[in-house]
Length: 211
Image (cartoon, rainbow, N blue to C red; front, side, top):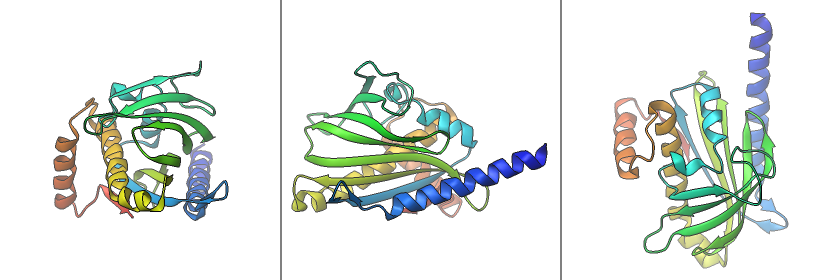
């Protein structure tokens, strides 16, 4: 019985690795060249716990620090699934960014990708965002995200790159905090300080990759 479970775990790791590599190589979507941002963090919990947190799609604002409000729309369920849609409000100074998003790829237990198909208060031309979970070579649970984006023009695409990267990494910290501690909507400044200190104390053990 144990050997069967071990084989399944290995197959899951191999599948996830292949899918991650495939996503990394994708830089042209629907004929448009997209900028790519990637972030990963170690989560001190199980693969299942991370995936369960990611399944909170329409109701993610119930615990996620970087999202003010979220709701499932167009009759879809709050739980992540292929075709699920939501509206989110993201704090950004005076006016919140308001996105409507739809899951267009979904591999249960591995990752999903959603497209931002409508956006207010941010110059989004096209954006696909992937969240997923895998195990690394040391058996640690890794939460990863990849953002493929193109803004209204090249100048804005370059101008907002750093801002988008920071926002994406803050998102991972929010998931990490909730999964590891159960805390909900903890101020992002507190999370940055907490995990920066942890990274210093453990040779950046919580950060896998940022580029």
